[in-house]
Image (cartoon, rainbow, N blue to C red; front, side, top):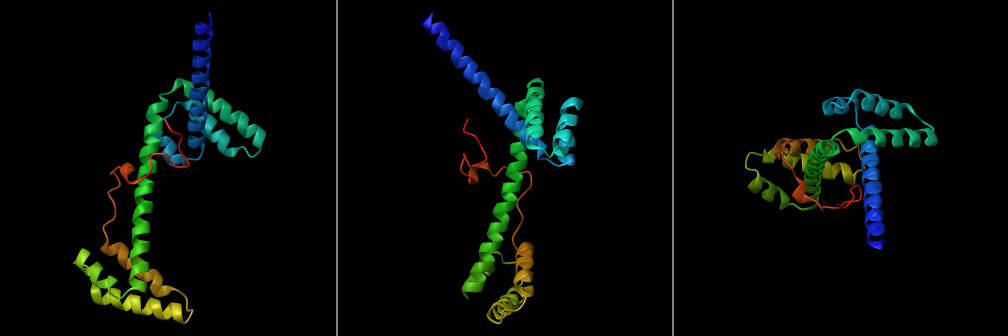
Length: 185
């Protein structure tokens, strides 16, 4: 009898965890743009519930609407939706990594004269004279506390030099498997 009760409690706990995960997924759907929602091709009732949640401003009403969305999520393939969201998150992560790489190169160029040689070696197609001039002007702007026009132009020049990541590439391996926005499986 005790074994049966234990198994029932575990399955009830598991059901609660699954419901909570579906509600969390529903909350993530509420944050998506209309175009992203359209890409998911959600059932009409779920789509309307998500749009309604976007309009709600009162906390209690929003909480109830999110619970309703979680209930509607039981009838859809949550794994497929979650996988699509992870793909989109991976793409934005790749873009973030790329921007950080550009920032590091710009900081390195401004701090060290040898960095331009390293940049030219890593990316032979770069216009060394143009980059050198932008670095010199950006340093002058910083020293004289002028508006950062060359500082920004240097970033744009680096965007032209360094290849952008492929949007379809999955960069999941570049990151910790459990960041603050994800739940461990």
